[in-house]
Length: 130
Image 1 (cartoon, helix red, strand yellow):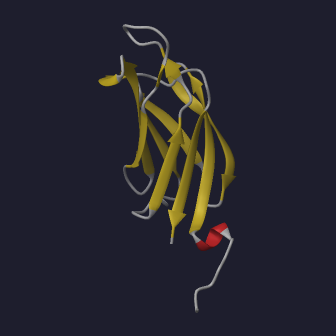
Image 2: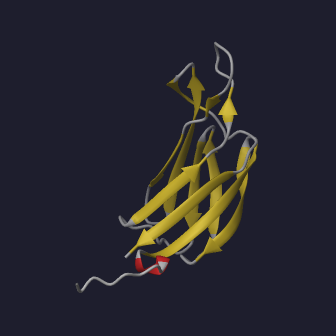
């Protein structure tokens, strides 16, 4: 076989970054960059309640960009008991911006109502494939 085995992550994706977002209530979260082989500087802006944009100064986000967000926050539903996960989405908006939307969970279904991040840190992982 001519297939080459490799365990190097760089053979799969060429650049990556991992960010920790530290929620600050109704202000933009603080960003800590754990690793960054993408380059540039990452910043986050709170656009409105539950809406954020993550920018990078080098405009690196292409169609080959994969983003993952892990939001461990939970909210008490408007009716019922217990807690439900806080639905959160992330997508590439432009070559320089990622769009993050955070919602309030209502008794097992998404109500569509936006909500800022809870108190726990949120992890964002960005990978750019060749």
